[in-house]
Image 1: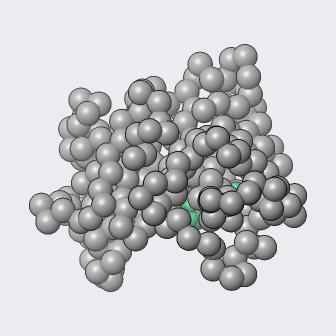
Image 2 (image 1 turned 135 degrees about the vertical axis):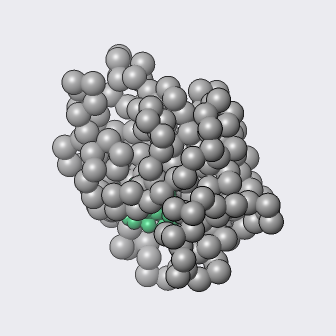
Image 3 (image 1 turned 135 degrees about the horizontal axis):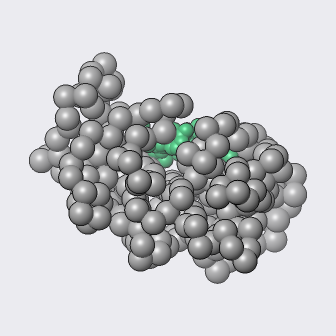
Length: 222
Ligand SMILES: CC(C)(COP(=O)(O)OP(=O)(O)OC[C@H]1O[C@@H](n2cnc3c(N)ncnc32)[C@H](O)[C@@H]1OP(=O)(O)O)[C@@H](O)C(=O)NCCC(=O)NCCS
């Protein structure tokens, strides 16, 4: 399903369960040696997805180790992202992108008390105007997680929930405007991201992609 919200220059693979034939490299095994079963499963299946996606780019199977602040370490020249939630795992990679951010969440309301912690007042006000049919609070969270995953490889900096203003539309798109200085990319400051979202099969998925061509002519990209 995530391919529906990604451009053709991004390869994505997803899984709705944990295939028994998914394997890890010894370096990856070492990372999760003491992890609980749930973490082991999501980590392993996400790597299975990532290697299948890399294969579609013509790249060999390599270990994908968590690096600085947990960001996945991709082969040189690859931008990508990983997500997992109950019943879903996905990886998206590209040789043409400057950055990629994806996220998946169960299509359910956020637990009580979470929305005030992750939303600006104006974002909460906007959610109330979007209408029925979608758990907009969860979608806002899902979009913000994708923003962080796309932001981090460009900046190596933290981005707090109140440091980007996310605007959702009913038509499957969203924008994020940075409220702090944005990343310098190819000599320009990126002031925000554009993304897409989809609700299907009890899940919400979001995706952000930026490639060099997106930097010319406009400051955000999708
Ligand atoms: C890191 C974070 C975004 C992960 O999102 P999540 O919904 O909890 O979990 P997901 O399963 O979707 O994603 C987990 C994957 O994110 C990736 N990830 C973790 N840290 C990352 C980082 N700093 N940069 C990019 N990707 C990262 C990893 O690949 C991880 O999977 P892995 O450990 O198996 O490799 C989240 O835990 C977090 O810290 N959020 C706070 C920052 C934020 O969202 N700010 C909002 C800005 S508007």
